[in-house]
Length: 221
Image 1: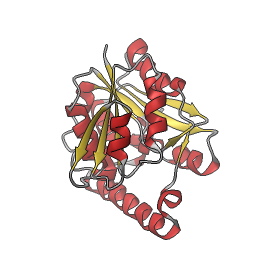
Image 2 (image 1 turned 180 degrees about the vertical axis):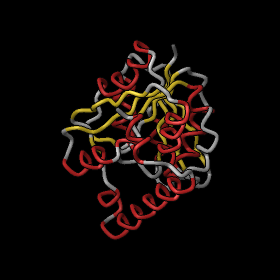
Image 3 (image 1 turned 90 degrees about the vertical axis):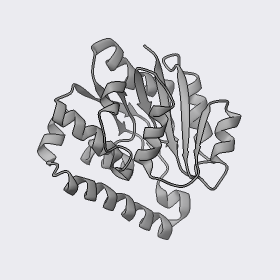
């Protein structure tokens, strides 16, 4: 089965190369697609210099739209999503997301940070269904009709589909992995407001779709 990695990215010129270079060492990936979501820095140039397929959206459309464009630019049967700002990514992390789908016929895997650093570990422990590190069969993603409009609710869109269809989902521990926070990227004040915007989009998606915590938690076990 062909496996594609999709990396949605917005202004990640300083971080995305490490993610791409690690992914290029993985034998399970057939191709890598970077989608720059209206980046105003050199994200596109860095991706192109890494010799991977690169989609440059002219304006920022949100994470869900970037993920959708990535899926549309590959015909692989399995899609892996990784954030562009990961720290300490290993080839083994990628394989742990893909192998349960290939070997155990799981429909989706969700990667949860463990022993990376306390702040990001805690977020994943409380809300593992918001992880951006996951893999899924192509048909699962294509059935998420609201992915493009979901913005930062993209991960909830995928999780909602798993709940509705009673899909087989495996939670995978990604030991040692973490990511750069918004505050570290753009400063405390701007990062704080960017985080509030992200949380608002997630909460709005949650309310709009009348999602229940117990049903979401159940599918992640």
